[in-house]
Length: 408
Image (cartoon, rainbow, N blue to C red; front, side):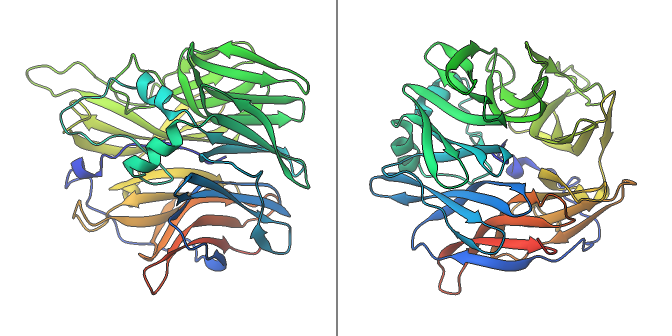
């Protein structure tokens, strides 16, 4: 369930933030599988319902549009997992309640989302990016006119569970075969659709949910956009109690959005949210001095909710990096990935892999340049990870790749 969005603010990182700490090495990934698809591929999501079941989702550009891709781990090998014919669009968030109940969204009608968020400044600031990586304008245009779909894997094959015409659907939370939530936007505004095993029911929401992660049916966390706030860059945190959504404002995140003559003010930008358990909710954020566009980044902050209160951390090894994909290490700690720089050069982009022990000690490894890890997934019942992304070949091509940290 790793479809997330970030903001392209690297160009505004201050030199103070980019002063990295000494590199540490939390672990080494082993290349498990590459898929040579002879196209312009990228990875958008990954999920592991069980130790013997996992999926990686991606897409590649075709003349007819963007072709969704799925790859499956069956407990022994990785292989291509055929999707229903004629699909076009961008694979969004995936979620599962079991190895026989996996759901995945294929996003279409992106113009609805663009219109909803059409209050971005026109001063040259970079537009938001999703973790799948930037898309070209033609690719976005080809994706924008398609109907959104939600797919379901029943343990044997993928089928289209529902087609959403004139709707932008991006996120899904699968709590069971008869309890599935889908989130997005239609012409009436932001919405969620609930499936009870037989019928679908629409519910209005006050914001566009881009990512949802569930603890239970009465506790779902979300990363969302509210166009009435900020400028469309920053996400908001929301929580569902089984009846209603409410915004969550961590009291440890410094914000002072009203600049004065003596202070530029501080604003916070929420980047990612990951639920590792009822008492382990992690949020990645940055704080900036002044407005986001053109501002200096003040700090890269990791927030955690323990079921009662919020706490914040700004470890030295994360300085200069934007973190995402906080996943369990199977021992009470966590792993995360990030991108940024440890050299002090704001244009020297690095991919990095982070580990946090249960006692709060962070370490970091800089990843090889040709290894573009885009999603991390904890393998249930183990201390291992799957990592999915792309790998540059010696000839300059791009392959979809899967790595492992430890044995699955």
